[in-house]
Image 1: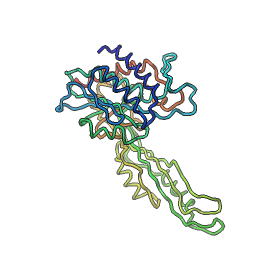
Image 2: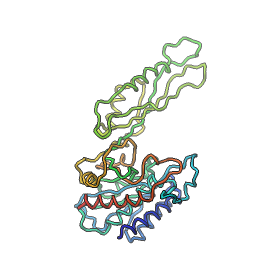
Image 3: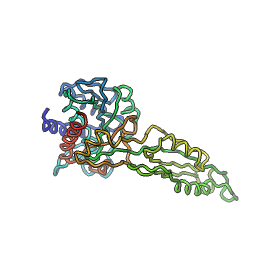
Image 4: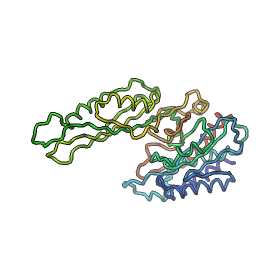
Length: 355
């Protein structure tokens, strides 16, 4: 199919997606739009919940499989919007609207790319496209529930705005709830076991702790105490202080290793991870996709932000049109030419890497 025609259709679909609210967990109508694309292009597809997926026509089990994945859910618009977030208006080469940059531009670009390669029989890889739900909330009804349903995936491109550079590694995330206990008492009485005072030393420990393994792409593990809560009234020394600790994990450690270390060493009375499933991810720098991207002038970097890569067990890279600094911002937009160039660059990348 002609690339220019695909670019035009992809932009039209992106406008329709913007005009259709699809907050996380409420993506049924945008899933329908993705189904309509496949029907129009006579491509067999499947839908599970609000996830829509398809395989290339010449799918062969003996070949390795590449997953092209992006999400069609959005956050809710923030209060600083001056535009109608659902209007999908083009001004000065910018397409405005909620989800335009995160990650509608990536989604339609990957869908157009999949459609371009759908009929091809000269590829060394199978291709799966999956437009998935609940990415913004790390929900269980998104990519994580699709992995047991789809054919085995060997490598993935996750569409997120990277200015079409190669995010070859991504930090994982573990959030911990911790408790520092003390002796409750009336504030007027002596108390040498004040949980709040004890917490001061605990905070110093968390501030000072360093994990020795440093990733070439992702740097150090970053541990940050982000919430603290204690007490209910001025004249009562509380029995405990509650802490929340955010840990961004590099690809030198598993989430389980971080959890085991903190459980054994953190100077608190209780610490437990909320989840261990949001893992760090990476792709070997000598992988054909990375080498092809470098040949096309793309740069490599490590990403500190989380995406659906965290749910994948295979090698993966994050790549897509748009700029992540615009994500979740007021009056979100993507440049029209970013989508057009995104499709061209995705196609050029796969032409080099999959043959």
